[in-house]
Image (cartoon, rainbow, N blue to C red; front, side, top):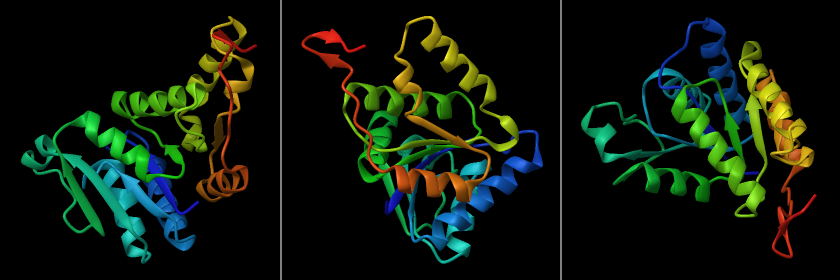
Amino acid sequence: MQSVCVYCGSSYGTRPEYKVGAAALGKALAEREITLIYGGGRVGLMGTVADAVLAAGGKAVGIIPQLLVDKEVAHTALTELHVVPDMHVRKKQMADMAEGFIAMPGGGGTLEELFEVFTWAQLGYHDKPIGLLNIEGFYDPLIAMMQHTAKEGFIRSAYLDLLQSDRDPVALLDTLRSRGRVTLDKWANGREAV
């Protein structure tokens, strides 16, 4: 795994541990020579993870829509910065460039991006590993909701294994690297596989 797309907040959140975790993830990516692919912002956890990658000598590639460049939130010191017309192009380019995904704490945009790549994995659009950096148990309620969704029959239990979770960025990266590509066949013969 030579590149990871990181989804995270454009704010810092209420706990200092979120920023500490973002910096630790950035450092771990650089130390493993894994290129950071992310939304291209200089603010919040996005900026923290990118700054940590760069400070440790790693590569950080940002993909940002023109609207956010116009609002002056683009990180201008990245290894590469791709300016795209809109969020749809941004998300596709980020997913295409990455060999894996990590969601850190964040808001609606982070969750939307996470669920998009999760759904794409279920449908077979990609087979890349997906991780949750569960700093301070941020994703515990989401994990419980996903388990509830499986229990209620809306997703197969096997899909829960698509989301690897760890509170430690180094351990999460190691898990995603060792896990490699994951293939599940949601639809078999026109019906959902059980």
